[in-house]
Each structure stands twice: as C-alpha cells, then as structure tokens.
Length: 142
Image (tube, helix red, strand yellow):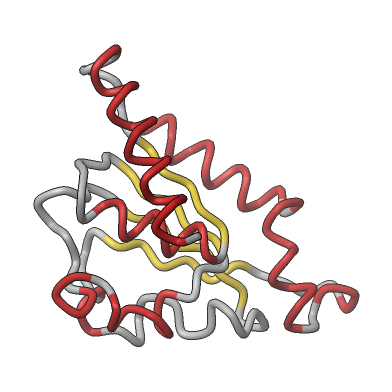
C-alpha cells in the first residue's frame, strides 16, 4: 500500500510538473500521509511540505540517509502537532536530522477537554481553525 500510494503521487506530480512547470509544488499529509509526503520529497523537488500529526520521530530511521533532511529537494517544511497526540509525539525536534532552520515544528494549542485524549487529538487537525489559518498564511507566502 505504502509504495503504491507513493507511485500514484509520483505519477500525478510528474503530470502537473510537465503541464505547469513554473507552479509551486506543495504536499500536505496527515499522519501516514505526512510520512509519505516526506519520503516523496526525497524523490522530487517540493516547494513546501505541510504535515499534521505525522509520526516522523518514530519512523525517520526508514527514510533515505536515516532521515537526513533532503535540503536539495525540500525547500520548506511545516510540521504541526499537538502535545497530546501520541502519533506525532516529539515532532521533528527529537530527531537531530530534522533540527534545521527550514523545518518549522509547530505545537498547536489544545485546551478542549473533549479532544485531549490521544486519538481525539490526532483527529482534531481537520477542524482546527488556527491550523487552517497557519496553512493559508504559509501558502500565501509561497
């Protein structure tokens, strides 16, 4: 599944890059999608990777060069997470390979008692207006 999804993304990226060569290339991924987005950024040039709730600190060892930041192909990376989200625990800061100026590791506020549990905090990204505003601002700056 993992490699099939990656192949689908590569094929679509190549179509868009051919048809719109000057367009900005942005990848967004939640959870495993963020991990796949990071793997993809080792293969193709990505202007901005946006991840939310991605298990980067758990699985970075499986990335090329043990998760060394792909500086030549990835220009910006914004990683969003909640402290209560066990899937995204630690974010990029725990991985010394990602402790770079071009990784913006953002811890979002979550004070709602209904979303403080690990699974609910992992699903909260989809309806968090502060996250949506941050993403919109990031895209405007591209």
